[in-house]
Length: 97
Image (cartoon, rainbow, N blue to C red; front, side, top):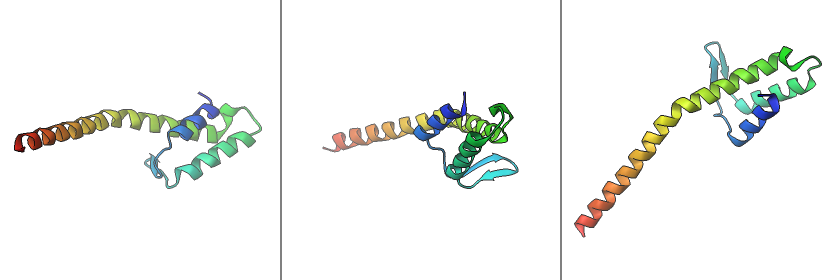
């Protein structure tokens, strides 16, 4: 995946405002971080794989994708819970009538 594909991903799936990238690197404004990475990569005169901003962007992308994959089952469970609760409530209301 190149930086343009990552940029398109983050445009359609904005990351949270704050992210802990590593135990020693906390990003307090991800949009500023992303703009900085894109700008640095665009202005880098060597090969992209030698640009430190590319590696930071790549690591950030991997972290966000991994976090989203881990949170997806929890979100599905919560959505199912909400549906079950609504269904139970509807049944209770029908029984009361």
